[in-house]
Length: 107
Picture: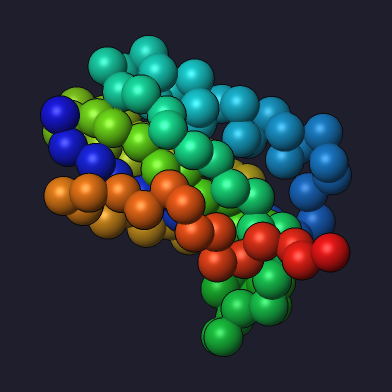
């Protein structure tokens, strides 16, 4: 098993219920394809550097998980047909940093 980080950017016009559905959908997808979710971070609505499909902002959801190539293939298949996701990125790591949260809301 390898460690991965996957960042999804969802459309800016999604409701809170839709965001929860998207988050749970990919959480279940990772779990069902022999993966194990270690941490989920919701970074919130952030500005994009350039427009993506005519969107200036997007909701960022970041997964840290353990999985294999089958897990990555399943995620990529679902992201391609999911109309609520405008961009995604998956990165492979040897060791995950689960202590730091770079976009956390400070009190």
